[in-house]
Image: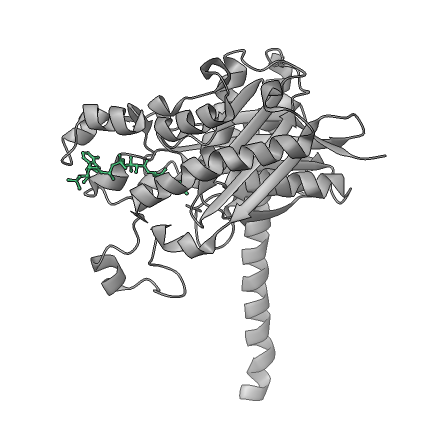
Length: 381
Ligand code: ACO
């Protein structure tokens, strides 16, 4: 019996602070008109210093778990797709796993630029279909604002911060993620990169002074690449699912530039009412853009049980990824107050337990050190 990977929960989290085009025009040589015309973006959400990638990811993940009404202890794996992790290591996914109280789960980060969420969704689907795991949490979370050069008008106007998450579960019932396509062309790696802070150019005063920790992009070339792969990858996912393009009920593309989205939709002959766009309010939130769009499309009642969805992303790497999904979840009602209270208690308890583990590790280390000193004393004398 084949297994299918169904999305059973979803959630998003965006920082409340909004930066409008007009605000940006006060910082760099740009105008609201230029940004709207060339990208479609009107504003973006920017994280405060306390709103980190892991925190946004955790809030989105909690909502997804809540919608699915699943105990975090039932989660087998946490994957966080991000290009702006909390630290080089440990993985942001481990921080989310711990704070969520998903004690049985493995956890890792996945880096595929803005294609990261669909890459992670494909990975989760394969693990569920192979019966290695049954319940997998996939999060796309970013704080791109932390790696932008706020004096570079060609990049700083494009991006925003946020997170989106889905919870997937295996079932024999046909539906869910039916096909996935992953692609990469590393020859275009230099078109979109953060050159500093890795093995090639480790962080140091010179990398900081030469702004190597910021996003560098050849916008025109990335644009050309994106318009080509968005339509191509979507077609491939639709073919692989055994659908015709006309059967797509909702197209959920990566939200980078409305002109790129329009060009892909036109090439695929998808009418505007079947294309979901929310980049005017968020900008490009990289790996978070598709799950945030999914949540908003659900909230807006644009997705019904049985609908055919296509997601497609492109980004640094260069990478691209698409998938076809037969939507099977029903919109949940408002959570019962007892359930919400139980969840809150569960998270508080996980926090206390995690703190307890850390404390016991410190005490253990201190006791071991003291015993070592005592044991060594006679031979020293
Ligand atoms: N305000 C005003 N003028 C600007 C700005 C700005 N913010 N940015 C660039 N310009 C100027 C340029 O300097 C240029 O001036 P010039 O002709 O005197 O040299 C002019 O506007 C036109 O520049 P182009 O780069 O040709 O503008 P284009 O129409 O290509 O739009 C854009 C630029 C929006 C960046 C577009 O190329 C694009 O969207 N590319 C794709 C970027 C993308 O999606 N990246 C994310 C990938 S996902 C990931 O993994 C992170």
